[in-house]
Image 1 (cartoon, rainbow, N blue to C red):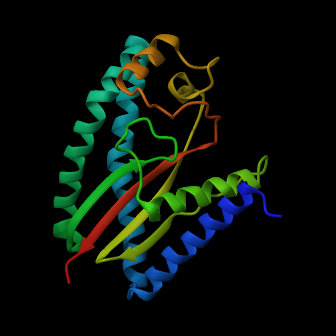
Image 2 (image 1 turned 90 degrees about the vertical axis):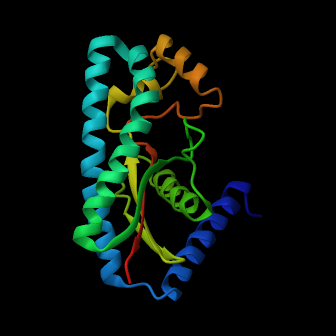
Amino acid sequence: MNKPGNLFKVSAMASLFITLFLSACNKTDPEKIFLNEQLTSEAIGELAPAMMKNLHEKVDSEGYAGAVTFCNIFSPKHGKQKNQEILEKFKSTYGVEEFSIRRISLKNRNPKAVGDNATTDILQNWEDQLTENAGTPVDLKTKTYYSNGYYTTLKPIRIPGKFCQGCHGSIEERDPMAYEKIRQLYPDDKAIDYNVGDLRGAFVVKIKYAK
C-alpha cells in the first residue's frame, strides 16, 4: 500500500512531467530556452547582489530587527525598479517584449511569494530530490518551460550560510526581536526552521519575445 507521502511525490512528479510535456508540445525553441536561462542569470546578477549588500549593511548597523523593516520596504521597491531597468535593457538587446523577475517559495514569508501550479510543482520536485538524497550533495538544475507565449525559467535559491538563520533558522537561531517584527508584518509567515543548504525557493523569470 502506498504511503501518503509517496502518493504526494508521485503526484508532484506527474504534474512536473505534464508541465514539461506541454512545453515540448508548445513549439518550444531550444535556442530561446538557452537564451532565457542566460538572461535569468544576468537578471539575478543585477538584482540580488545589491539586495544582499544592503541587507548585510543594515544588520551590521542596526541588527536583524532593523533589517526586517528595511527588507519590508526596500525589497519591493528595489525589485520594481530593477524589473523596469532590466526590461528596457533586454528590449533593445534581445528583442524582449515583456519581462518579470520575482521570488517564490513553498514556505513563503510574503503572501505574494507563491507560485502557480507549474512553478510550485518544480519547487516540490527540487524539495523531493533533497529529501531523497539527504546527506548527499545535490545539484538542483535550473528549469525552463514554454507556455502561452512565455518562456519561464526557475533558478533555485538555497540557504547559503548562518547569516540567514537570524530570520529563517530554528527558534534557537532566530533573533527574538527580529522575529517579533516579522510576525507583526507577516502573521502567516512560514519561512523558518531552515538549515544551511535547504531550498529557500526560486527566482522566477518570465519573458515574452518579439516575433
